[in-house]
Image (cartoon, rainbow, N blue to C red; front, side, top):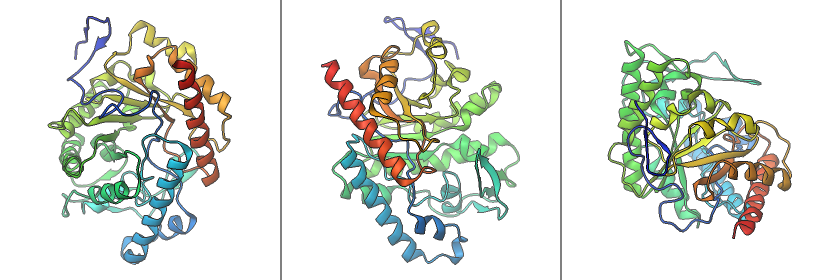
Amino acid sequence: MTATVSPAGHAQHGAAPRGRAIGADGTLPLLPVSSIGSLPKPRDLFRSEMAPLKEQDQEAMLATQRSAVDMWLDLQREAGVDVAVDGEQYRRSMTTYFLEGWGCADVDPDPVWVMDNMYGQRAVISRPATRPRTLLADWYRYAQERSPLPLKVTVTGPYTLRDWVFDTYYPTRPDAVRAMAEYVREEVRGLIAAGVRYLQIDEPAFVTRYDQPDELDLAVTAMQRVLDGVPDEVTVFTHMCYGAFHEVYPKMLDLPARVFCLELSHVSPELLNILRRVPYPGDRGIGFGVVDAMDPRVEAVEEIEGRIRLALDFFAPEQLWLNPDCGLQTLPHDSAVGKLRNLAEAARRVRERLR
């Protein structure tokens, strides 16, 4: 899709994005702090959820999951986070939760290498969905009743749902992605009906296909379908990790999101200079990752402040959201809490100097 140039001189790509950059209602502070989605699970929850679904005590599991959500909502409020997440405490993974829950996949019993230091189970799509695609609305209502903070809900995007699993049902990848888009669209419609105003569509697989234009176009089309009809007052985020945004910039701007959450805690000023050559659109927000989601070391407040100042060299304060690079689920509990606290304090200090 060809870029045009706005009167402000910023490149414009794709369809008009949904929502405003900073927030749905204008009540958030400058440099709002949020998280990407996942947060560490209590040890007993992590152990019990690894059993096959048919062997789990679902009533006991639900109670444990709710308790974990309650804990993280309280901790985020105490840490000074501005827009909370529920921590995805009820998801085995960002793909299996949806595909199992919709009834269109089983989990392969053999673990696969999924990250630099861990194995995980992978879903196998083997049939169309057999259960309602409304897994998240009740969890949103549960969390909203228990937190005074606005909440952001995270949904795995249709392209990643296909790219990160096995598929024995659909004849082609595009067929599978289009089907996943319809399912995710139903989840999103349920969330909008429940009152969600901050919505994140996770598409980490987008970055990994940077050298395959047809695949990127497929991901863009799928997200457009997911978000078609979403009201403008809903602020839509997308998240991409792996620290390779420069490989898909400015192509990523074809995605119909308002705020792009990127892994930038270790990005160099030289790499960000791509934004000098192709300026970031003034009507888009950036979720600038300023703490490392893979390193258990808790960055000092001053270190995080330095990363925020780097971000301000390239983005207007009104464009910036501050977040970790990625979900914090793989970190020790105390590391995740410490990172969120120091992130919120660094944001507070920088806000004071901007006034």
